Length: 618
Image 1: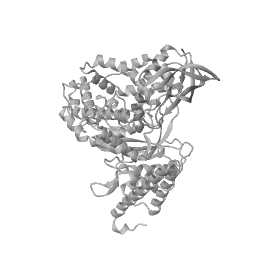
Image 2: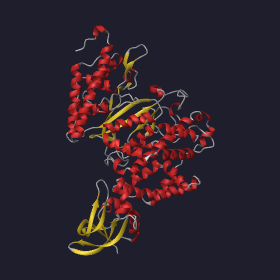
Image 3: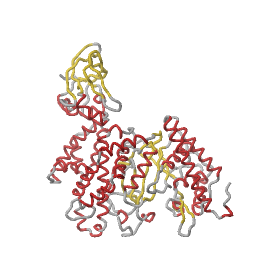
Image 4: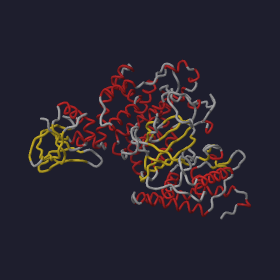
């Protein structure tokens, strides 16, 4: 028989081609005496049910080879059973194969919240894993084959992710391409380190970071596997965000256990008798030890409880350096822990930290894994490929983004330095001129770095210390950037990147994120940089100079400007809340209260710092 009735994931032409590499003649049809069962946020399956019908398509000319691949995908004989059933097409009855589900066998998948794409991903991952097994057997020579496969999968996880993504973009990849990509992917090694005495002085810190990234990756994968329905994101958003947040939350509670385990296993330092893969195995074992289902259940519950999705895509970039602003062009050995991340790529840390977008930013055009450089270690949430600036928005939820920032800053054992918040622009709304420069002072009150210098003078350090200024460029308060979501896509998304915030450990960034979002929606100001033709360039240059002057000697924001700024933010958030429901509206009102309180508190600090003769403020 060469006829097959399809109704669920197989009814999707792209998915069918991914699974079989083939396309067959198809016509609309009905499956008789069967009922379609589909739980919310999950995949569909058919059950025998007298009198019921399922709409779908009848495929003709289906080859035995294609059926064999589909049998493997459907778990024929276990999850599904391929049966012959009656199908109605063009008013006539014919017979065809159909895959009928086994509810008992499918229950674990339904409980986890697997949807159609999850099942396709799992199937493709199994195909990739066959080549990983061969590579592990030939290269690692470990006694425990399962552990050998796990560490190989982890060390090549970026390549595996790329193959999975390419499968969906190209509606399937030929096996020889998968084999070639896996075979050509290099496994990291520490052989080079034995002859590099300078690098050995920093090896313990780098290897600890290797282990911490791997532990994070393993936990993120566990949350994605165990709680599929709770970590799913919208298609255009980065699909590791929620599971990554949960992994970071678990790591915060288990921080001492991680460090103790690393010490007990002797992997918190450089040892010549250990290979890179040995450190990887240790990290996997630590992740297995600290993952507790009861704790994971509570974390998933708390994330669900706090989520408040808006409608505007958000992203963040976090910069870290123990040298602060001196990270750029730092001298050799100036940083006693990482030497300015000079050996970041030697320890393969970009591939270890790809889920968090880890790379080195030396404020040049682009850093390459083939070139050593000193600079900031940067995490770019949602950026899953550095070359080509390929990224997706991290989230549309200010709480999720703020919590990710806070937890990542806590987990990365490096001094936090700066934070960039990105908000996708509205394509149908033109940028506008902002007449009141004090609106930008309100942003600096919320996100800048206002503190005293060694002489007790109040300064805004991000501008005054020239962290976001350049003699030829000016003040980089915000910039218009563009990103695309896959390398072959010509369509770009425009985002405004606010570059002024200071990254501080333990800080809740929700008020700042919501203020930026409300301000951007309502005012939509011209970004300070990145716009080719701004008709108000001279006006913005005047604003930039006023910001430089203010940063050197901060003065209170006037009550009228402060209140006007709050009104503007409220207007923007109300506009967004119209499409997001009552819960989000309540959340916006809560955040507005916090924004107003923070603004007035910091403004009062400036007032209190003024000489008494100027302390009156209107």
